[in-house]
Length: 293
Image (cartoon, rainbow, N blue to C red; front, side, top):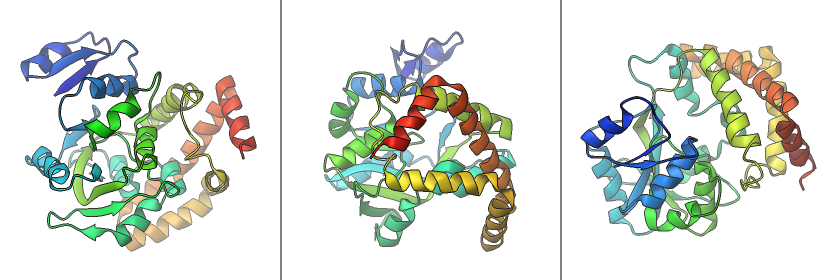
C-alpha cells in the first residue's frame, strides 16, 4: 500500500508505516497530486484510487478486484456502486441514491445505457466497453486501474484529474471495464448540506477553475454538456420542478431520502453560480465554455 502524505501534522505517517504502507511525499498537497505520486510509485499490476472517506465492502475486496484483471487481460478498470454506511447521516443516503452529486447525476446518465447492455459475469459483475463519445464520470472511491496502461497518463506534467485520466484510458483504446451493481465501496461523504457547499466551493476553485488550463475537459464541455448544464440551472433554481421529480422518484424507489433532492440541487446551482461570478478564473472558464465549438 502507498500513502502520499501532503504535509500531515498528526500521526498519519507513523500509523501508515506501522501497517506496512510505503509513505511518499506529496509536496503539492492536493489529493489529485497525491494520486499521481502514488501511481507513479506503484509496483503492482493494478492500482486503486482510494480516498480518505472510503471504506472497502467485504474482506475479499482486493482479491475479487485482482481476479477481474487476472481473468481478462483486456480489462482496463473496475468500479462499482457506492454505498453509505449504517451510521452515516441521512443526507449520505441521498448521495447513495444518485451515486454522485446533483450536477453530475443530471448531466451524465450514460451508466444506465451500459448496464442495460452489459455482459453478466459469474461474480455478479457486469462487463462492457465504454465509448469515447459516451463517457462515464468515474474517479476515486475505489476505482481500480491497470497500472501499466494508466502510468503514462499520470506521467504527464502538472495536474491530472482521475476522471480525466479514466477518459484518456478509454480514448487510448483501453475500453473494457467491469462494474459491480452491488455494494462496492462505502463513501462516507457528508453530514449536512453545509458540508456539500464547502466541498463544491473547494472543488470549483481548486480542481475546476484553478486547473482548467492543464485539464483536457473537451469530453465534458461538448454541446450536449452545455445544453444539459443550462437545463440543470432551470431544473435546480425552480424548486417545484425538482421537488415534483423527487416525489416521483421517491415513490418509485420507496425512499424518503429523495426529499433532500430539491434542496441539494438548489444549493449546488447557487454555489457554482457564486463561484463562477466571484472568481476571475471562474468567469474565464464560463466564457471559454460558452464559446467553445
